[in-house]
Image (cartoon, rainbow, N blue to C red; front, top):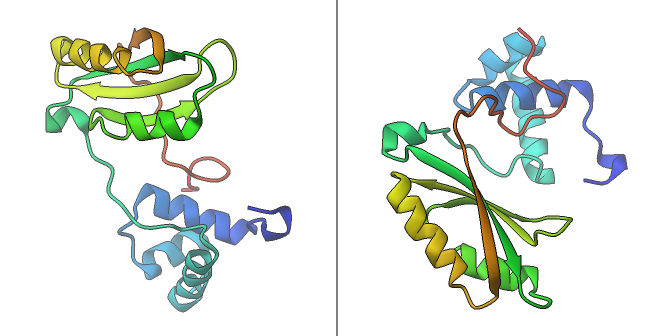
Length: 158
């Protein structure tokens, strides 16, 4: 977002509340940020029009859905593989929850969720078999200590 479209403090506060609970009513949000429900609605509508809010969603517990194993898999690519090629390949894996090109020796960092270690192993084997991948390196998550929704300026104010 360009600097001239920077969020004002009230918009940022509204976004923090909605990132914590997307089902909050405009009145509930207003009570948290000291605005009326109609004022919150107007601001949310503007944020949607600007593309700041792209949708409303639910945050799920992966473990409750049977996804008990998580890992970060580093992919080292052959030659100069384009980001589009990488994206097209990893988008096909339902186990991939995030993928980013990164700086350094690694070309692509992939966050994977799997049912168990055997499932994870199969996913890593399939990723390693992609034609552009020269090798992989995996790091298994032991404990997820901090997970935050995408929010501006930190946690919502109580």
